[in-house]
Image 1 (tube, rainbow, N blue to C red):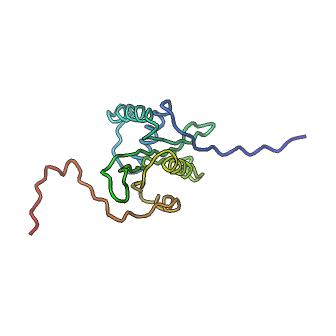
Image 2 (tube, helix red, strand yellow; image 1 turned 135 degrees about the vertical axis):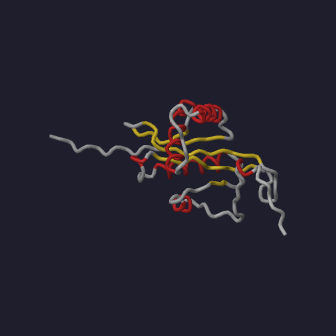
Image 3 (cartoon, rainbow, N blue to C red; image 1 turned 90 degrees about the horizontal axis):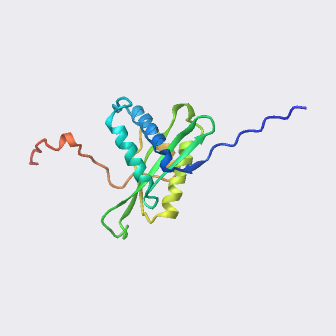
Length: 176
């Protein structure tokens, strides 16, 4: 008598450890490639710097967390990362601690299973229970806004602007 195959349990998000740092770099490469950034090859200097940064950051569980999903056959296939940053205190944030959620990525072959959602939700839970942040910021890529909005993120009341390093030496014309 044959028994029907049991459905495999869906992998759950778990907190990353320093042993997971290489996978975080690999998923960062996937994310940046998807965004059209020039990632270089395996020997690109930024990759070893990122590995060092992730390894050191994972050693500070009070201000940094990464959550990953392990597929039983393919290893780590999804992640989301969060960090606490100190800012000047304000009436709405007397402690000055803000959260930043970033580097959300799932391997292309594993997308559509809710893994990124699970990792982001685990980070939101970490920010809510293990930190005193008053707000969590993120920068969404095209197509990811629905995920974040469904988890409660909303457009900032104040628009984000940037000044890139290559623009810093450009003289600014006086307004007039």
